Amino acid sequence: MILYFSKVNLSSVQLFEMYQEEKKFEEMRKSILSYLKSETTYRVEKFYKDNQGEIHPVTTNYRLVTGMKTDDYISGVIYKTTTLYYKKMNDITSEVESHSIPTIEDVSFYFDVNREIVGFHTRNRFGYKEFNDAFAGIINMCMAQNSLPLVFSVELYNEGLEINEINAELKNIDNIKKLEFRFKLPNPSDDNMIRKLEKGLTDTAEQLEEANANSMSVIFDSDGGIGLNIDSSEIQNNLKKVGNLTAGVSGKEAIKNGYVRIIATAKDGKIYTTDDRKPIKREISDESGETFIKACRDTIQNIIVRRINSNQKRTE
Image (cartoon, rainbow, N blue to C red; front, top):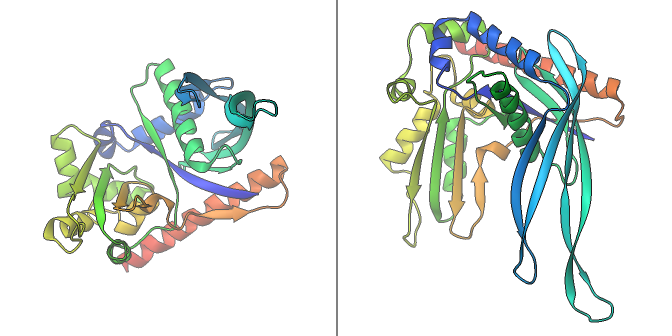
């Protein structure tokens, strides 16, 4: 079993107020822990088109069942129930027909609320991207049900990339027709970062504050035959913004925590994204609850230790 880890981020303009009052981050985390209730169900509606062109609505439910819950973490399972459409040949008519069956998948998770990191495994039909969307959807439902105007996103936690690595990887992609930079306000991960934010925001964060926005996207499109010029001043300026999102957050940390996403689409349709680069994973052979929780807890602790060591090296 492979374990993945994701960062739970507040994606609301209330972050600007929290930058000035540290205790509000603690209140936010306590709210998540308090409001995440068992049997909360997040629902997604999609449509399936069969061979005859008929449209069928497909409802997918993600039901939260909580397990252990302390002042620091919550564990549990998300059950995904949906309808699976598949094609099968009719033995009599030799025609391909559409059929459907109800399915259920289960994914266990361990959410360290104070560190804002959730560990989880995946299933064949319940991958990490879908888990991130479902977990964010459940949290946001719980916030809305308690009239708390906070919106969260969940991003896959990875090893991070230096700006020069991103630049080199983009240059290795032939004929980029679309390049998107997505910037969002960071959630301070430690007291040191909060103190730096209290002293003032960078240009990028100030632009967001002036616009009363918590995120922004910059998109470059090309319909030409040779694709985008990665060395252009505008693209290079946006690469520099990756490392200048807010005080106390390096470019590598911004990518690692999901504060910045870079998505490149080549003319052949292939997509490069920093989301999927170097994800932090851990393999376990025993699926028992005790082994799962210990593996998640140990890996999250290791993530925090490495973060602290990295911050210390930058300040030396």
